[in-house]
Image (cartoon, rainbow, N blue to C red; front, top):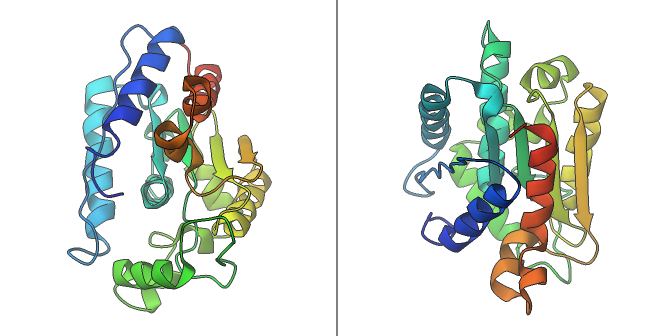
Length: 235
């Protein structure tokens, strides 16, 4: 969706739920990164790495950090984790947990197909993916398109200390690629919790907050995410 302003209500609601879960002083750092076609790889990834380094400088303990994002933002989180995996002392830089909503694992894939329910369009997505990559060769680079990485050892190094949560809709365009990535991560030995919401669309926890009828329905995805974070990172 492009701007942190769009997500403001979502983030404030999440902050409130984290306090309810027992965290005394939770904080959310929201990255405003450049969008295509104004910028392309590696600009957005560099911005993500810089943002993560800033948060680490504040917490002084990466294990206290949960990295999160939805859609392309979740893809940048996966790329960030692969960058960390390439560091000699990667274990000292890995976050405590990763909570991903409908990531876009492989930017251009024949498994990304339109569905009758989802609002995303594969043709447009592949156009944006190519704009981000800059050239066809980059589409084979795991830092650009994390889903192409099948290296079990690398994903083992990339995995946060307490693992991952993946939350997505069963009817979304990225469903097959997300399932494939989950399989690879589990083979790497990572703990992966999956919530595939039946009949739901891309980024359904975000969409529900704006479109659902009741507060319970609006906060359903957020509450589930908060519970998973609480299990992974002590208060």
